[in-house]
Length: 351
Picture 1 (cartoon, rainbow, N blue to C red):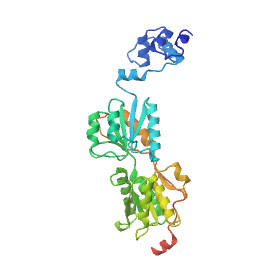
Picture 2: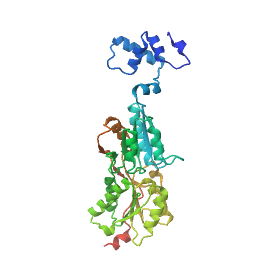
Picture 3: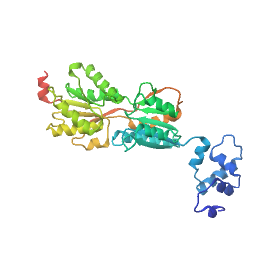
Picture 4: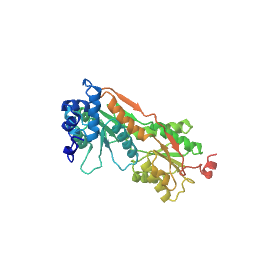
């Protein structure tokens, strides 16, 4: 093969491909970049494509970004990587980005020495073509920051006043499913371990919890809500508070899988049998949930779809138009061993 030996051991260039195919370098460049106005014979185009494949040509991403003013990279900012919820979002976003020819770069506010502002400053210097922003670290001051960078953005499962570009899950429905499951088992004393008070997801899940309780004829006096952060430690503290109340519930809906793991641990440590004395159900699912003792009943939400659709919408929508999207993927109850019928003694007491 002419030209193969001469380029062995070094990066294949457009000139190498042009020499191999017997055409001008500019022709190869225009074919590589899918120039719509290039007029060449079909056999010439096929010969160049064959040479590109045969020589193993790889486009120079840095040079291409200079020509197109695009980096081929998207940024995703998360509160932390420890929360199992974010793994599925990242996976979905990576799949969608790869399908569109983009690379996904992720950052976290928990990395030592980093912050949301520092991360946005870094990415805002022309390093990414768009931003996906997840978690509760974003308050109303983010509007000014995003305007400074003039980058397309999309909030993931988070709404902020003054920003009308977001994609969210149906958190209200998820909470209603959890409560309805417990009510179907005979529970009426159902507490809710919510998320942080400033978290949009926590507000929506609390709203769903209250809607389901009231729809079942359970009024304000029956509603018990304890705020916690989305961590196992937060779940432990909240469950200890729930179980120390005068009117101990027979069931608890926990707003997050990480805090539910802590809540389950606290209940068992305090000597309660789950589910014989206390039923627990969590919003969001995780492979870990099936291997807890007892396995945890959860509401599985379309986190992969959330990440996937976020990338699609970011790339396909106009940056100047509002975008308010609710993912319509499946939200389903996964019944495991942490939920059961209301304790019989409590049931008799309520008659």
